[in-house]
Length: 466
Image 1: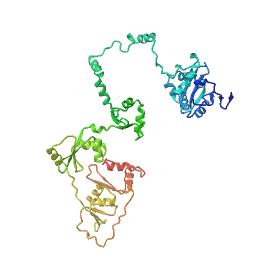
Image 2 (image 1 turned 90 degrees about the vertical axis):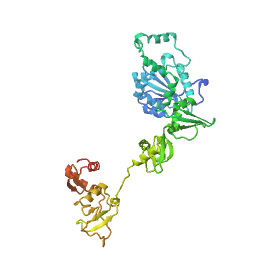
Image 3 (image 1 turned 45 degrees about the vertical axis):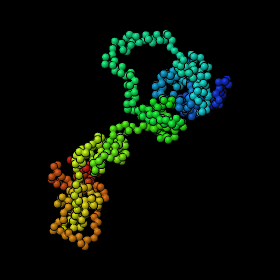
Image 4 (image 1 turned 30 degrees about the horizontal axis):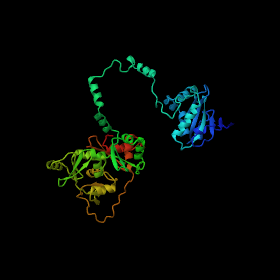
């Protein structure tokens, strides 16, 4: 035996009978006298390594044998107090809490290859457990390869004790009786029809279609768990199949697809808005959304309104008659827009500088909103950019000939805070004052030019009092 640094001792492996040694080779065995000081070293030495380990209590000599395919992960759990408090069913966890890590030493009895199966690790753990007397170990189960209650039965004494513990006042239902209504409900809940109804109506279940390539057949299951149970595989395999968007058959045989529930929904009727004739039927809001190229919520709202959509279709959740279609089409309110010209004059209103054929054309140039343009055009004293007077109508006494004029190039202000602000009374009838920019308005009301102008913009957009 030779000592290493940091209380680490290297020991050559014990000689084990050949019949019990697995085919995987055994490497050097390690011992950590102080697991608190060697915490980082323990994690580092055993990273991505599987094997058998042993905890020894220095105070009473009791030992615990364990195994893991990833020793570093297992030891990390033992160092976490939260894990120990959660796993109080294991005697070793209770012992670590009671005596503290400093009173335990750790030994790696043997390492196994990563390819070693769980069965081989359990066989090696069983070998080491059977070397220890029952009174000197924390392990409860002597043979970990067998499930705890497999092939075992409670003794008559234990059954009698369990029965006596639930007799009389110790029984939680002592002195209580079910009402007749409860008994009827319990009776109904035991029926097979009720069980099937619950399975089919579970909100979190995802119906899936399982196609078997070899048998050339497909089955529909009400949930992933039901499909996994029928195929005798972990349900996590099917969950990962969908999460990773796999296309290849699982195990070269099964293809999983989510069941299209939209086919189970009520039909949605399409009618032509011009000829008032039947067009087609679409099942489910998801398919309706794909057909219209909109979000599902929009499709749901359109279907419930039973009105004309995009001037092309009449969509409804119920079948409509000719009279219903005529009524719906007749109730449609058409938006009427008047194309108005914008005339730009000089400050003195004596010379016409430019005429825009529409409000949109002026909006594209001035970058002003429609409400601001309307305010400027209807006012007699407000100016655009402090230089131009704009109006919907031509001024009779001005020069409206547009002759001998060059290109119209107003000095636009790119900054958003240079937009003029017009202040009116609370009833919006009396004009009070005009500010050349948002900052100037904020400075007047707040007393600070550096105040945030976003609040003022929001108040203007939502027409709130300032």
